[in-house]
Image: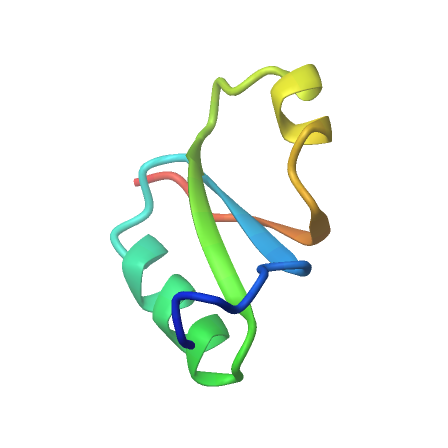
Length: 61
């Protein structure tokens, strides 16, 4: 992506401590979709501010 490209669609990943969170993010990005990792304790109101088209819950340890 170039710097002038607006990010309109984001897949959020809630990180519950899985060792595969970074791998999940990379696989989503390889599908040419922007992904962003959030801590598991982020508030619903904070998530609502993001342009999310999907949410992945990463597993715990």
